[in-house]
Amino acid sequence: MRYILLLTTCVLTGITLAQPVRYRSPNGISDKKNYNRRAVQPYFLEARCGLTQFYGELNAQAMHGIAGIGMGRSINKQFAIQLDYNAGSIGGEKRAFFNSWFMNEYNTVECLVKWDLSEQFWEKEPGLTHISVLAGLGQIWFSANAYDLGDNRLLRFTNSGQSARNPLFLRWGPAKGPRGIKKTREGMLPLGTSVSYALLEKLKIALEYRFYFVRTDKLDATSGRRLINPEESESYSDTPNDTFSFIAVSLQYHFGQKKK
Image (cartoon, rainbow, N blue to C red; front, side, top):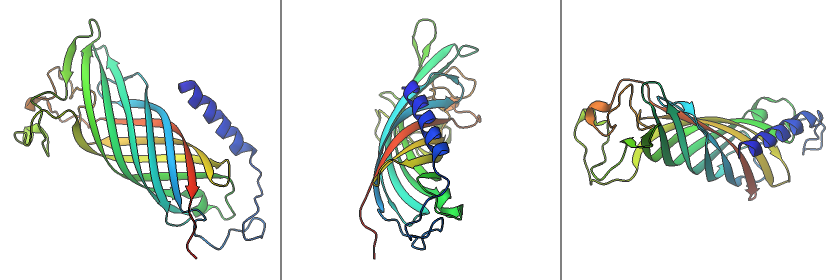
């Protein structure tokens, strides 16, 4: 998978550098931006796959996979809104102090706003390659387990038959709701950037990097410099919340007709 991503990155870079400097605008005037700022095909579907990276206590990297789908609508040529679903896993290890490795399987739902910088700031028609940034809000459902590096014995976990929903960390009070939840649920803030290239009139390929700030410190089944199980109330610490990211290749299919 990582070799496919590397090859795709090289191809996209080559295409971008090889793109002609002059691009004829749809309004028939060479180099001039089209006065109509509405998207020609406002709706789009997207599929992506890539690799994840974790930042936290057990941060010695072990890259894992991610796959997702999305759908959205362009408000105009500069802005679009989209709804994404992703499923993947993150992992890592730390020999010093913890002597453990972890695996986290997660699902996310994200609502994003995408800003096309090429359409916004280029004085001339951008052409086939576009650079965008995106941000939004999301929800993550995850289950994490930490194991001993020597004998793979389960050391810490985030979910069990006694787990229950809690609107805040357990240090703020007892858990509420039915017990036995299989996935911990937390809010998150996704930020990202992408470079897309129009392969066909309705089909684009993109290289995307997305970074997540998650409202929890136990994505790696570890909270601060502690060895006790993160389900326990005293295990929550004042250390920064965990974060993770992914780099992915996506295909976007655009369809629909702009309003007259």
